[in-house]
Each structure stands twice: as C-alpha cells, then as structure tokens.
Amino acid sequence: RMHLLFHLSVLLLQIATAMALPLIRPDSIISSANLAISYVESCPHDTNTDETVTLFIHGLDSSSHTWRRVQQSLTTPTIAIDCRGCGHSDLGSPDEFTPDALVADVKSVVDSHPLLQKKRFVLVGHSMGGRVAMCYAAKHPEDISALVIEDMDIRRREVNSNFIPNFNEAKALSFERLHPNLDSVKNAFGEIGYPSDMVDKWVREGRVYEHGSEGQYWSDVHPAFRALCYRRIFDSNSGVTCWNTIAQHFSNSNAVKVYLLVAGIGTVCEQESINDMVECMPSTISVKTYPTGYHSLHGSVMEEFLCDLQEIIEDANSPHLQGKL
Image (tube, rainbow, N blue to C red; front, side, top):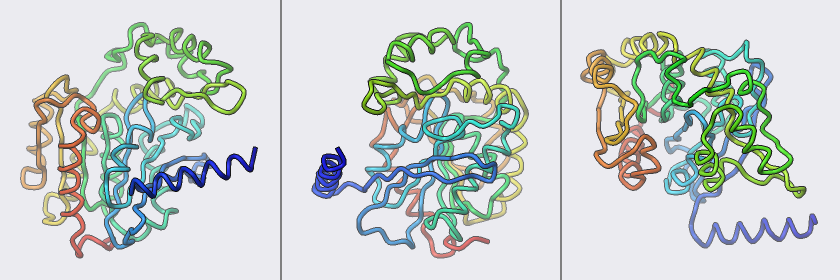
C-alpha cells in the first residue's frame, strides 16, 4: 500500500507541475489554546518569499476547502485556515469559544508560519470569516497590509435569526465529524435541522467526503461552529466594536486599505450597516457590489473576484508595507 501511495503522490506532483498549478499542502499547528488548528498552504513553484501573502478565513458550514480554487489561481503565496471545529481543526470546549479565542487561533498560525512571521499580509474573510477577520484586524493591526471583507456587515444578528429551521443546538454541539457511512452523516445533519438538499450539495462540493479505506465519511462542516458563532459573535456588538477599533487604527493611514465586497444577489449585508461602515473610515474603505454575484463571491463570480483580489495584493505589496510596525 505504501508503495502505491508513493507512486500516486509522484503522479499527482507531476500533474500539478504540468498544469503549472501551485502545490496545495495541508498542515496544522498547536495553538496557544493547545488545539490542533489546520490550514492549507499554496505556494507557486517560483515563489519569491518577499511577496505579500494572503490569509483566508472561511464562513459558516465551511472550511479552508472553499478557497481551494482561489488558492490555485493566484500566483502569490496563500494560506487558508480551518477555524476551530471546522475542517480538521479541533473544536475545543464550547465554553471557551469566543471571538478572542478565534483570533488567538489565527495568531498562532501567523506567529508559527515562516511565510507570515515578521511580515504584514492581506487578510480576507468571507461571511462569518469576515467577522473573525474584523476581530483580528482590531486586535493585531500591525499584521495587516490590506483587509478584505467578503459579503459581511457589522450589524447584530440574534440567535433566532439563524436561517436553519428548527435548528437543534444541543445536537449541533454534540455532532461528530467522523461517521461510519454517508447515510449516518446525512441523518445526523437532518436531526439538527439541515435540509437534505444542502447536505447533498456539500457532498458534491467535497465538504463531506469518504475518509480512509473502510467507507467512513468525514464532514469538514461542524454545526457547532454555526451554533457558537451565533451565540458568541453574531448576537453581540462585537462587529460594531471591532469596526470602530479598526477605524481608529487605519483611518489616518495612507498605507492600509480596507475593502468591502458585496453580493448583488442575496447579500447578507444591510445598506444601513454598510453606510455605518463607510462613515467610520470614508477615506480608507472601498466598497464594490458585484451585480451578478451571490453570497459566495469567490465561488459565483470567481474570475472578477480574482482580478480584484490580485490588484489588492499587488497594491499591498508596496515596500513600505512589508515589515510589521
């Protein structure tokens, strides 16, 4: 078996090289909270380590997997993190799930990874990941060369605004990501309240997949992450508080730019909240709406999203933004 795995890895490497795609390397670190936090690194073969690195944070019911095509399409180094409980990262105790804990997990990756140490980077957060990115930028502004928020505002969202009907929070918190078969994981999601067509979509996309050689299935999606994010982050004033702090850090800076990218179809952003975000730092923030883009802009209008992100990365690659303050 090891012999076959070796030849398979060589074949995959040859294919990736032939296609001129960056190699995707999964890895993990032990965080300051003693949790395994996983991430995926992508580096082009001729990577210049002086180039600006982009760090991606995913949203609810997701993982680093959502950024895979984006990472493979960019010519600069990227790292996509699995938030605690998602992908292959440990969840830890629900009692310790806080905005500061999520930020500390990201900081542990930043401080331990050679591509991120002693350099500023572009931070991109989608949806709930946008909130985590805001919290990170508020606490560690010295790490940021550009902040990109993908379809997320700063308004408070109450727990009962969760769009999953009859969401069973107790079962979400006790969810196990490894299941003996596909029916088992589907049934577990169904008992929590997830629609079957949503779970089927995750299977097609690779968020739920066969794991190992015994027919078991692993879910990168953890319902506890959704439940805890609503309890501890959405249903709080952390969005407004963090945004005001970011404004204090960046409003008088001509270097660090903030970008708010808004979906034109089915956005989760309210116009009043967008107006509040702009009012805090009118000279620092750029807002763009994608008329044909859905909530996942990096999935629905990927080409346009990539074009804009590449420009943001190039702009952030200015020499005066390379070192940390």
